[in-house]
Image (cartoon, rainbow, N blue to C red):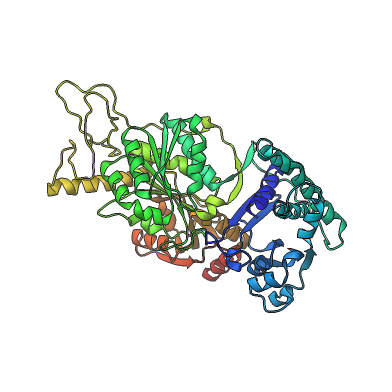
Length: 591
């Protein structure tokens, strides 16, 4: 289903539609087949304008077995079409899904929808009976038959999928190209000739898009490419030391493809080794990256403290998932914020940046790397499973439009008799200089023990207090380089300001626009430090409503930063993104 959904989405992106997707995987590695917990889904929202969310409720539900119908029938609109594989609705399939009657549509209360009950398995077998494929291989093609039917319903051209099949299988499995093309075409024709489909739809290409070349991109892919762009603009080789973990693994996999761009990747034996190899790479003068999700971030916490103490540039990417512990590995959440801000021992401030859409992951990764390299500090980039796995159209940028990244490397030679002081700081930024090992005269040591400006171990109380304060102030002064916080919607003053951060962006934006121009909304891409004008923006509103996918972590952070302000919460912790309808109701209640 993931491949089927991806093909429909990519085809729509190339056609020019606005697009947003939401792959939804089972939380168990091997959930029992045919059970509700084992359902894998792929939600696609296309439009003739910009699309900001995967949508709340669907116009077409494709359910390949009874469990898929049971899990997703609640998301059908009142006039939705439901397409099911009749062959899967046998006694065994119904029992596995937990149905208690012989009519699943009546049991679920969706009998009044437009039901398309097609023998898809049988039709696929008939379509490929002369293909020479065995029955197991033929059954794998039934999703392509269904995709053909969906292409008919939404007037999608089949040529893109033909090209995809040829590109993917020509070298290794050319024998499967013709059968897949045939079954796709037969599914399209079947839909065109049955009488059960009352309407077809034509969704025109999106208008008013900025001119350029677009492609469909996932958040994890965009994150990897943003880091590669930062490598290019800084002139430094990229090193990523990571351990595979859902849903962040795809970033490591994507970077591993691009050795030709100077990227080096290491799949370490565990999370701690991953970040420690990255810290070593930073010490040696590389753009250093490590990627993970919530449980891995916990394991990396001590080493993040080492990077803070050594004041080395490092990008830590956390693609958040449901927790605590193993939690919901394939579901989305924003519940690592407190860990990102405070999850290290001692006074250990780190810069925190958040991506707000799949395409924005590119810019967020680039900016995280720029801050890390120019301010000599580790930066934590927060993404989410919804962003990492989801996709949207992305305008391919020109690198000339991105700023140069200028790390504070030492220059020239030290005067005779003078020793390098590794923690001596720029008086404006408090950033220390970066001396790559092997440079004559700049020999020095870094590590986890407290030192003075000269790099000498120190247990002096006054020195420790000074260094703690300087490290904290260095992070605060990053705000001078951040863009000002700007209203995305609504007037600059009023009774209510809606606030979001991270992947809630598209849902909140859609909700406030649905309510009307009178709703003011700001979104935070920079968490620590906050934009310098945050207090000024907040001062013009009577109350602030913070919407986030946790129990109120950003709201509590803002309350601590701005005591006395009326900051309220709207939260969801279900492993799923907000529904626009939920947000509309919550905002209108506060208004």
